Image (cartoon, rainbow, N blue to C red):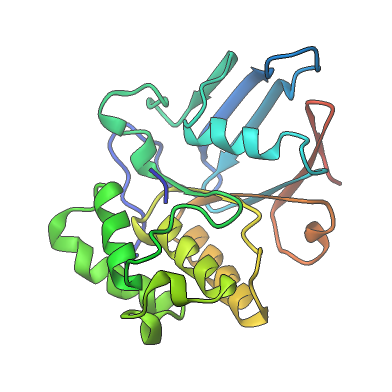
Length: 239
């Protein structure tokens, strides 16, 4: 899973990339972890639209990561539905997940002893990028995320901020139409944040949708089309 040249390529079963068209729809999602605690998500509905950036904020542990994992198809909802056009996370052949670019929080998904170029090529294979496009997409990702000079350096010899750029490059590499980003600013300096903002804008211009989750406060420094807070298992619109 996930983790680009022109516009994202959609399968015929996915929605058309028309500005404002629904791309990913979560309807009345319910999820409760084992134990006596209340549901982490209760009747949550969220529509991600083509060309838009959606921000969801909230306290640590409130359920933002769970929401992203449900949207990515990593978890299946206990009630409710997750749909991308005619596709669901249970569609055969990983057709749903091929359209998703997922950035988890932290420093996961990296192979320490791989070179940066090897890491991106490895990820391209996992993301089902056709062989004839892998080299060009890897080269483009190195360029777009400012990693060209580090292409032949081992991942474990990169700084935390540089590793975050690699992970972001992986999420964007295969031209997904849905980008799910969990605290993407972690460890990025100002230059890294500028790169991230530029790539989000580029993806949106090509018709993709972006869901960005982070603690409260980041909504004051990032640009989004619509914002929500997650509290007590429910989403509330930020006006």
